Image (cartoon, rainbow, N blue to C red; front, side, top):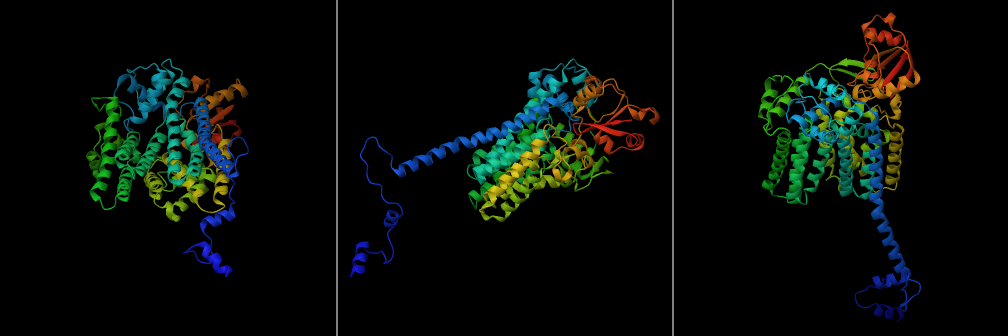
Length: 583
C-alpha cells in the first residue's frame, strides 16, 4: 500500500523506482528559500552565477592581452634585429627598385619579381625620402649599393624605414594565423598558433628584412583562411580570397602553384555549403582566379599606368613547352618577362652546401633537411602532432585540406628548384603549420593541453635564446646558432647581415691590426670602417694578422682560401655568421 501511494504521488507515466527531473534537482541542490528584499547575504546560486560571469569577463580581456603580448615580443625582436643588421644580399636590390618606383614610376629593375612587395617597401622609403640618382648606370645590385653608400644617404636609416612595412605586415599575418586557428579550432588553439608563429626564428629573421618571402607566404595563408570563411558567405569572402591570392602572385611568382589549390578549395567550400550546385561551385573557382589576375595587373598599373616593359636586364628566350606556357599567361608583359628570367636562373648550375658537403646543382631533399635544422624541436613535434590530429580526428578533417594542402604543394614545388639557398623558400611552412600544430589542444585527452603548453614553452625558450641572431638559428639537436655554419650556408646563416657588428668588434677588440677580409654580402665594408684587403689576391705567405671570413665563404672554400683557413687559428665569432682567424 505504501508503495502504491508513493507511485500514485509521482503521477501517471513515471515508472516506479525513478524520480522526476525536478525531484532529482531538489535532491542534488536543495531549494534556496526566498529571502526578503533589502540588504543581506546573496543566495549561493546567485553568487556562483556572478562569479562565473566575472570569470567570463576576465577571459574576454585575457585572450586579447595574451595575443598583444605575443605580438609585442615579436615586434620587439624584429625591430631590434632590423636596427642592428646591415643590408643582406637581396635587400639593396629591392630598396633601389622601390625607390625607382617612387621617383621614376617605371618597371626597370628587378623584373624577375613582381612589384607588390616592393611597393610595400616603398611605403617606408616614402617616409625616409632617400636621395636618388636616376641617371646612374649599372646593374640592379650596383644601383642598390650606389643608393645606400654613394648618394649621401644614411644606410642605417634607409634600411630601417624599408624594413618597417614588412615588419608590420608580418605582425598582421600573425593575427591571421590567430584568427584562423581560433575560428576552426577554438580560443586556446588560437593562442597556441599565435605563439608558434611569433616564436618562429625563421619568421622573426625574414619578417625583419626588406625582402619578399614573408609577404608572399602570408598572403597565401590569408587566402586559405578567406576561402575557408567562404563556406558561410561566399559572395563576400571569395573575392577577398582572390585578392589575397593575387597579392601573393604580385609579390613572388613562386606562389603560382597555390592557384589551382585555392581554386579547388573554393569549390569545396561552396559545394560543402550548398551540395548539388556544380555551376555555383565552379563559379567560385573562377571568381578566385579572375580576382587574383586582376590584382596582379593592378600592382603593375600602380607603378606605371602605361605598363612599359623597360627591363635593365636582358630577357632570355625560353624555348619549348615552358616558353609556350609563359606566353599564354594572362599577366602583363613585364610579369611574363620575369617568369622567363626565373626559368633561366633555374637552369643555372648553382652551388649548394648541406651537412658539410659542397655540391653543384640541387638536392630534392634540401628544404626538408634545412627545416629540420632550423626549426625548434618543440615546433617540429607540434607540427607533426597537429597534422596527425587533423587527419585522424573526424571533426577536424574538414579543415585539414585548407591547412595542409597549400603548404604541401608549395613545398613540393620548391623542392624541384635549383637554388638551395635557405629555408626562406619554404617560409610558408611555419605560417600554415603554426595553425595546424595548434590542433593538438583540441584532442580529447588529458595530456593534450599540458603537453602542448610544455612544447610551446620549449619553443619560446629556444627562440629567445637566439636573440638577436635569428638568421643563423639552428635547434639544439644541431648545436644551436653557433654551429649552423657546419650544416648550412647562405641565407640560413650568413647573408651579409653582420658587417656593422664586425666593424664594432674590430674597433673594440683589435684596434690597429691588419685585416684581411672575405665578405659575402652587399654591404660596403669601408663605409662601416672595415679597411681590409682580399687575401686571395696575394701569395699566402704575405697574409698575416686577422683573417676575417664569412661562414658561407669558409664553407665552400677551395684553393688559396682553404689553405689560408687551414693554417690559421679561429679566435672570434661575429653574429654566428663571420669567423675571425689569427694568422
